[in-house]
Length: 110
Length: 111
Image (tube, one colour):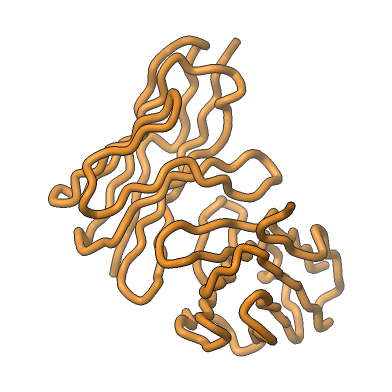
């Protein structure tokens, strides 16, 4: 069973479009995250939700909007995509201590 | 603000060699430190988790140590194998469920 899953795995789109990435965890964790990994492989946290409430919102453009319909899901919606948004986006979940990561979504903006 | 650095950025060793990867963090007020492995084009796999009260953790050929006061952790890999080739990342957890990742060490084990 996949613990943290993301869809889609690859996303190629034109500048200016709006797209969403979905994340689901079946671990029963209370906290979920979105990270961005740039071309230099550096991982930076974007958002963190605990029990559907936003607890961390780093300096991310407001074109990025996370949505948590329930504790097991944290989706990421991106408006007006820009070239600089191209990266790999990882979803993760944790229960106080250890983090578990999804397989990543490679977003390419043309 | 917490900064996490990993040295070296890249490492290439012959199979069978023992090796050490380093992770440094600037603020010792951490809850725990986690080591991950990332294979090309894949997600992160958790290797070891050390709580702030612990000094080390072991799993198979891997041993991670933590010296919170000096802001350092090491990941020791014994008898390296080609299958160990990957990027190794450390991450510290601080207050508020915030995690900071290191810059990673890219390891290549040559058969």
